[in-house]
Image (tube, rainbow, N blue to C red; front, side):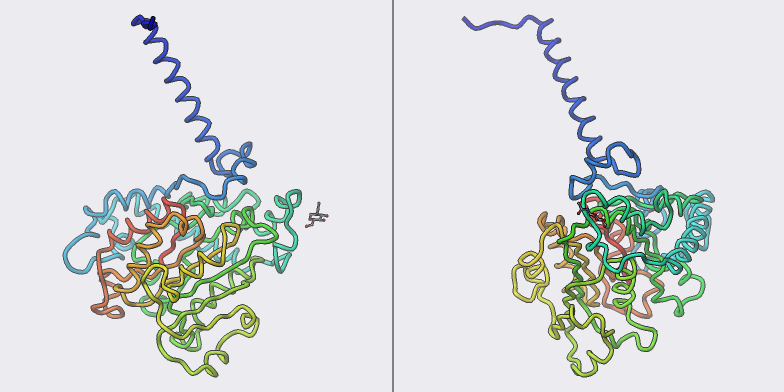
Length: 374
Ligand SMILES: *[C@@H]1O[C@H](CO)[C@@H](O)[C@H](O)[C@H]1NC(C)=O
């Protein structure tokens, strides 16, 4: 005979289920708490390869929520510099926070410039017992990066640690004031090498996929890609593989004359255009998925100046969970209708500044530390 539940039994069962559900949620959120927020759970943080939660800086959240109101979604070009120049574009308090962030950023860059590495390659030092001490040597402040940004507290927390908040004009804010001379200034990006070190293994490979890899374009001032490889190297992450794709035919003698000799052993120069077609041999993500795994530190830079090719690649990344898991840092010059860049980008643009904020925010939310590139 089937047992029948009385209403009071059902209530009890309901209460028990809710309690179990609540406990489970607490358990899950403890597991996913970033180390910086809860020292006691650092072990469980280390055991999962990617944080599932993205915590944007307050100013980034504000801009995402108010993008339409600010005018980042209008017909025709949108002015990214307004938020830096005009307190009324946002609010006096947001404008003030932006200024504080800029002060913190300058201090951060001074620390990066003065950083003296203790190890040429962190991987040769790391094991389960030494990890914390070794990774502490690449921290710019003993209490972590947020302590460097103490005045503004405006950093976003991704699966790869802290990064700069997503801010128009999608490059260094001093470009708004000084113009062309700061067009390629990359010192608006924030890298959390302490956090990257904590997920490094002795067997991890450090890999760069460089799509749009011309070294010539930037002349004497050095290529932005070299800035990136130098930065990682200086913090103890020398590159094992650099896949450099470039569609414009170059004289190989010239390519290897411009290349810093220390990169030669890692450099794969592929002087053809990338294919945006998934699984095509010349789609860089094909090699990435075939040859590398989630223990590797994988950096992808996408700057091919053609929305028709770059957007399918970004959409592929966004829609492919395996790729999301593999790619750690993503640098992408998203060519949208940003008024200040019109003289440089011309008609090769697609979408609005709001679209760009949403895209990068979504990449970060999914677990890729995405940065605007120049
Ligand atoms: C771990 O690495 C440190 C130095 O990085 C070394 O002194 C120590 O012997 C290593 N321990 C083990 C168990 O390999």
